Image 1 (tube, rainbow, N blue to C red):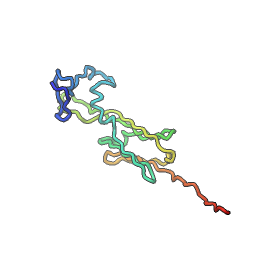
Image 2 (spheres, helix red, strand yellow):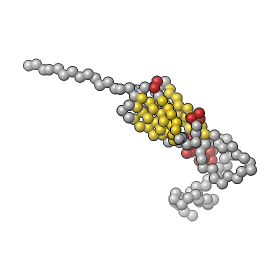
Image 3 (spheres, one colour):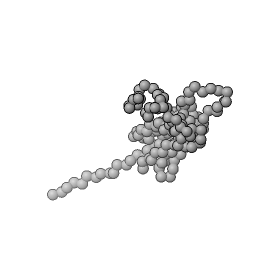
Image 4 (spheres, rainbow, N blue to C red):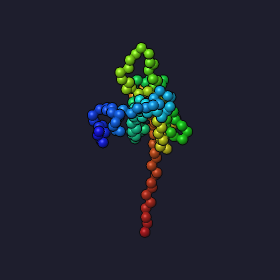
Length: 155
């Protein structure tokens, strides 16, 4: 019995190995949100990856949402300058006569929130979706530099 789990050797299943990656979940058929099976199946989609870059003109968010339609995604702005991106991918309907060999695609809800800076133009936010990538652009107000007037020193 190994005391160190193998992260490189693929999945292992050994009832005597405390580091076995195949963990029995006695609640897998119950609709509990904290069930091990739910968290493992949905973990990739629940932690949706977002790129956020700031250019001189805007904040640009890119979100990978493969297989989702724009109708299944919601982009919202809250009063306190919070951008919220959310959505849900439904579980594929199971036919009792089908035999599943593997089910790796994620399903479930996701929600990401970002607090925007004071110079964000909240009324000019634009969102588009192309090839499973959501792009949200939040324009920025130009920061006025204070006028500096040089005073000549006499004397």
